[in-house]
Image 1 (cartoon, rainbow, N blue to C red):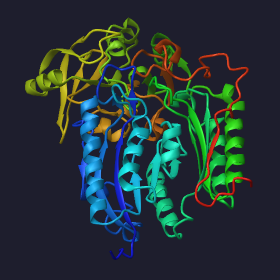
Image 2: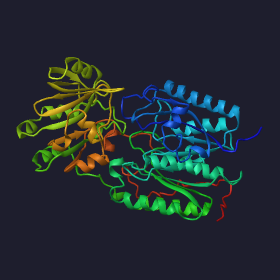
Image 3: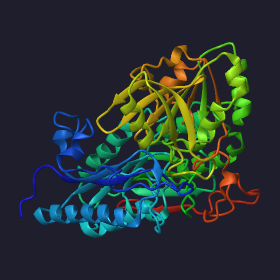
Image 4: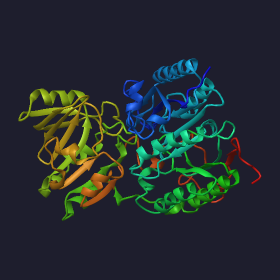
Length: 503
């Protein structure tokens, strides 16, 4: 069989960040699978005319992706996985595959299954064979199990949080694969140094906007630039799933195995040495404390993170605890100030408000349809001031005496100024803006005159001790006494094709 001049590379994956502490589930439909050409059109670099479009014969198989949520039901996962494997079998039957881009996040959970990504990587490897290179660009809040590290040939990850480099990382994963495929067979597979570090911290304590993450992640491109190193990464891990793989990981990948080992050990040791320096990216407090500060402030807008139910970290999104507290707050009502609350998903409530129409006065019961553990559904009475239908959502704004409440048919994040202004809300002129989020995304961060992070309850509670991890490997910082722990005890080297392990 005549091989094509360009390498044949398949693209597939399941990408999700999933809290096992949330009762929510993420179905196959929610993961909105793309197939065929749609998989490729999702990224500029291998779209027609893109920077990598002509460097390979790209084969879109299936890519399923959703904002963070709950675990995937076992049957839904099995269906998606089976379709990926069937698509790969069809591609291999046509001609051998040279490479696979495995598009994963690193923190997906499946009901009854640990390590979804490692399991998928093994299944993909069984189909494409040992000579096919597999590459993945992951979220730094993902996890890298030993299985995943051993099975995937090329691993890289984001280097910023918030993730302003997410597209750059996905392109780097594809580019690294193509560069290795340009080498002769038998020289393509690099050595991989993998160091699991017993640290379990939320992203809100590990943002690259502040130390020690700023300088730790600044070292990553310096290591990557060393002769004999292809890539380096620090995965800080995902704390809101209770699985044995959940912890920080450092990896260095390259042809000089000894150098990879030394640099991975150095990065991991510095991460461990500086573990006590990690702190929240903003001042924190209970909701009562945070609201008191916001109302006393003479600057606006004052942003408040309702962090425990952040939908982009895995919260169900419909926890009503904070909204109920705002609506009953005598301090807010007596201050003369107004707040925006974004948002509470409730399909029945959103549809009822939309049907009533702008200008109507409504009384709705909203929220806690999925996660009612912390508070029941809330009674919301006010005037409908906006109804904005979307392609896959419906958003309404209900104006109460003190709070403009955004109610949606589907949960969604509010990260951009336009998310508010298209609803007729001006966050810049608001006194207080309460957003279901952890650290503020860049536009909100730039907009905020001041900001605090409220330690509220939910499936992604920032107080990890309240969640009660039972299955993560112990001891782990900060849940346990780690004074006698060797952070390099679990380090492993996977030699690759050309590595000199005695180097």
